[in-house]
Length: 101
Image 1: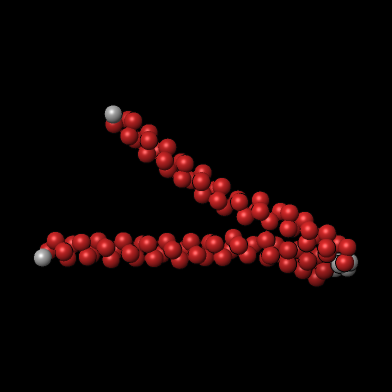
Image 2: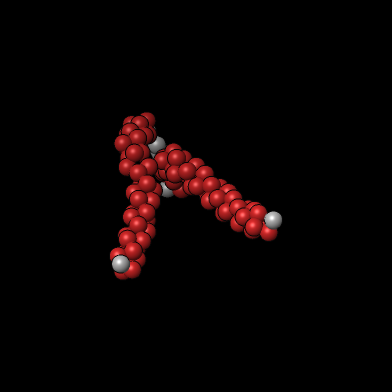
């Protein structure tokens, strides 16, 4: 009976960590997916309100086209960073394994 209590306690702790991880990942994905739109919006706001320039339709459509072309590379940056971190962790594990052998 005590064994089941220990398992339940460990599982509750595991679920709490998993829940926190999923909340962080969901927040991260919302930020990542909305960042190209927010960058475009912020650019137009700064161009017109902060710097006081007039935004012509040619400038606006050119900027929108450039943002669309940059969208995929910008969306790939977090994935690339994540792959780098995973590779680093994997290399540490392999190194630890090889040192034991």
